[in-house]
Image 1 (cartoon, rainbow, N blue to C red):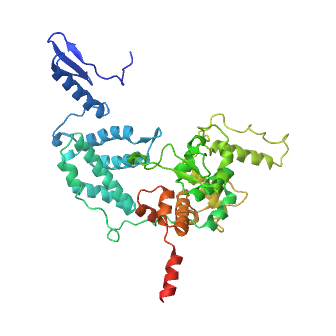
Image 2 (cartoon, rainbow, N blue to C red):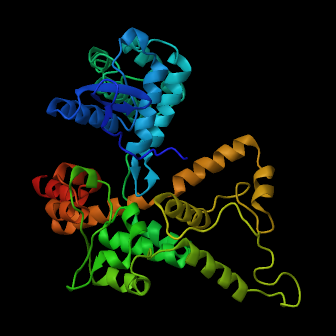
Image 3 (cartoon, helix red, strand yellow):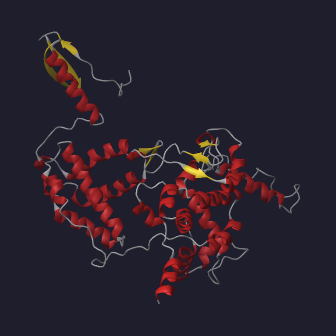
Length: 427
């Protein structure tokens, strides 16, 4: 018979001794005389501890007998269950995986008690060697301390170990070789307008709606007709999941007349289907190519005849922030092409183009594309800046769904024209 992994261990009677017994992960636990309140209380405690640990038996042990790799393995089991959203692993889980790999490689066989502040600094030096940014290194260090803090909460190691690791201060700006990446800034509207003609129609409408509403990229990707309340003149979109829901906060996106006009055609579909579908975008692209076809149908490939039966990658039912961003970056490459020799010729395939470039030219191409590209999250910054300029900081805070105005100030650039006007008047 298959093993019942979701079954709760049963309270049973041990006939030979008359005691209550429960078997957890193959180990018998005697609970005292069968049927007594004390035996039931002990049973409830043992089962609760077992289930709260993700059906893992974590025995309290001396720190000297627990190795770093055992701590990492136990945390990773917890991580795979905890860091999941909408049925998919979160970015936090991927970040922990990278940290676990680095620590295991250097300190896997070391006793957990011997992994102290100096060990943390050694791991941090590895990240510095990789040229990671100061912010990324500090975040990774905090996550590593969090792994040990979790292990202490599971009684795998003493609390003093994560407390010692927490004494390591983060890298300070200007006092470390780690670089600080430039902050995310609003994208100029003229840059967006120049890129829009090169975008697929569906992505084009997503960009316009995001500019008008200040949505997050993930929110525009998950938009469904069922989530939009159209009872009032201003529509309300309540995402099924959002960035701060684990903090107990609600999120409402207000959709005005201009955004409604763009969104309306996408609401004429199944209520629980994503409004913006890559499958539809690919179909529209192929249909446009077919309409522009110059070769007669009697010659060459007919529509659908040169497709793979089982392609490795298929268009999904909805966009995610990554695919949304990649579509915009491709349009930016077309809207802002580099000069020769970095420019792709019309008769070249992508492979032929890259083979033609030497290493220095490839680096120059990457730098050019990085400078010319913009990302969906910058649209949120642009919307925040415009709202703050016209209606003030509080309005921008409400529209963006921030709990505190300090967060909004990161998104909404201060209006420099106000400062210039003040200076003109005070001389």
